Amino acid sequence: AQKVTQAQTEISVVEKEDVTLDCVYETRDTTYYLFWYKQPPSGELVFLIRRNSFDEQNEISGRYSWNFQKSTSSFNFTITASQVVDSAVYFCALILYNTDKLIFGTGTRLQVFP
Amino acid sequence: GAVVSQHPSRVICKSGTSVKIECRSLDFQATTMFWYRQFPKQSLMLMATSNEGSKATYEQGVEKDKFLINHASLTLSTLTVTSAHPEDSSFYICSARVPRVRDTQYFGPGTRLTVL
Image (tube, rainbow over all chains, first blue to last red; front, side):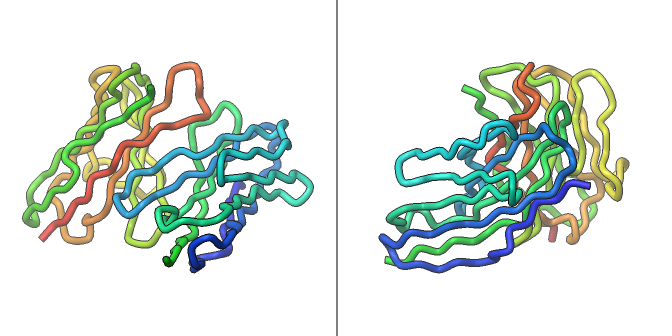
């Protein structure tokens, strides 16, 4: 069975601090996709990144970066120089190749204080 | 591209009434749409998969007769909560899959349902 674990329920940081959100997944399949979504207080899910299981290259997009390590089944997300607008719930998710079911982690609530 | 809308964004209804929530793909045709439910401070739980022109596939534990799903066109799926009760109060989010890109879903802004 597939599973996504986000062990950090809530994280609080002060603006400009760096913060890493952890995501550990479980699957026996070799082909799958991993995602990160942001859910601000408005509720809408904002797509951040999609990564397939064969691409372990780390990715950087502005202040956001992702570290994918198949050896530890982890797909961690780092925000550099956090800002108040980064305050939201962040979900990591997994979907197996050629299936429809997106499996979400329990989410990490990030609060960035000024 | 890949914009999904939901209507209404917020609805309050009395216990025993039915509520319809619409999910539309605005700039693409979606043969498959998904309905999720999210309780406060919890994750998203898939309720059902909606396929255009056929019956929806419900996840285990989801009452088909209570949560009616209709996907009558390639851009519209509706979720009707029938005979709503306070325990049905929740945040309902739909998503749609872009054709030929099975793995990526685009989400609507969600509908907050409050049943009094």
